[in-house]
Length: 203
Image (cartoon, rainbow, N blue to C red; front, side, top):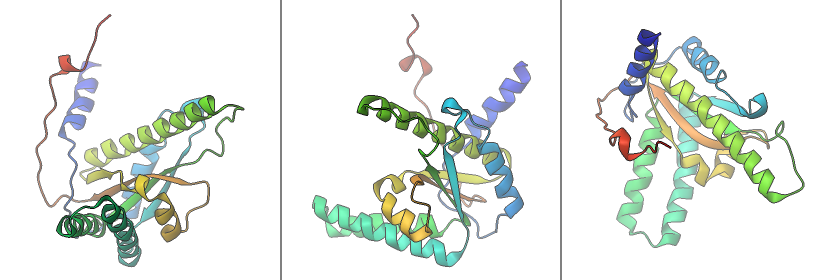
């Protein structure tokens, strides 16, 4: 048992958020295996609210990157951000999205979740769906690491869900939560964590 736990922990510790990829394509069969791993995450009421849109064509990636970049530029201009910083942010976003062989847009749907008569419980139900969908994304990231692939979780779709939905022609109930870039790493990154005791209380 301990060796299995150690093996899983090693995969978790090795995983990095990689933002630069080789042009080498990723086989569809491999992407499907990652998605299969994703859907075995736990979910609230076992409703499995996750949905996935796989984007692997150059044209659609470019269209998505341009549309999301336009919204980012508009938001930053309203914030009064200096023009040179805006262009730097937009260019960085475009490069990350178009530079990945595969994009997986992680969405949630509330269609099978419970509905209540009060806002408090409906909000909690939404949070339960979001947590479930995030756990599916974590499964996918770990499966990618174990398969020799690199990936990065981008939260940008939360800031422009309508843009993502329109560009990708997603069903109306699909709510974009994250964009996972996927491919073979073209960079190496280091990471660290604060000491465990800074985040834990024992009672």
